[in-house]
Image (cartoon, rainbow, N blue to C red; front, side, top):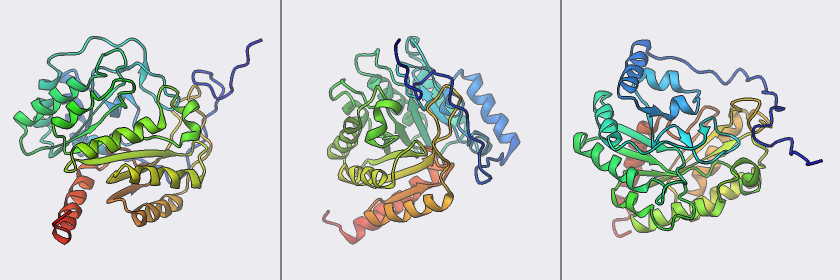
Length: 312
């Protein structure tokens, strides 16, 4: 009889733990929430807010913020923590770059975050499509800063360079968890491939801010978290996000524990002392949560650094 690992994805035996009192979301402006929804639906676009069942959707959409999900709503991988559906994706929409650009203008975004599903079926993993979206968005929105949250482009060579050449203001790629959990949590990814991607981006263009994030509550230890911080600093990552893993369903990777806000605050202090430019650390922190505000802070800190060290 074949043994089935109790934590295997799609094995519905992982009950969801009751959320603690400190995890609460809110709607800031219901009118803006429905206006944002209307713009996204009218242009037939996808957002990670919806597809990944983000807990902050009410607050962000209430502020007319949204993270666009390009290249469809179907991922070629099956990460055990993620709520985005897995399967065979559709063909790329050649009009999507223009749609994203117009939606950015309609929402009057000063800072836009663009992410995607994994597209291992494409020769370049979708790097060219990312580049087109960045360039088209800039045409209509020259004053909007652009942040991309990309896949790892595993086994695709240096295709990511096309995205770097399109010069997004922020290049984000999430590390997600500690190396010891990759086989179970991110079976289609490789930890050091992700670290090296971030390192390579910064080596190509030092003016681009780099960013990465990790989830807590999957079974990682504090020492492992600190090691991830060191690995990301070795890759010259500027901005670190630390958030709570929220188990989407009984079929997903089992949540081990809810991390208290005090622990998040402590990790933030440690990360800043280690040398990260900006650290966002709280139970509801996500990659694009308050991304516009954090980018402004990063920019000011970088300008201050250059004034202090003009030759670097």
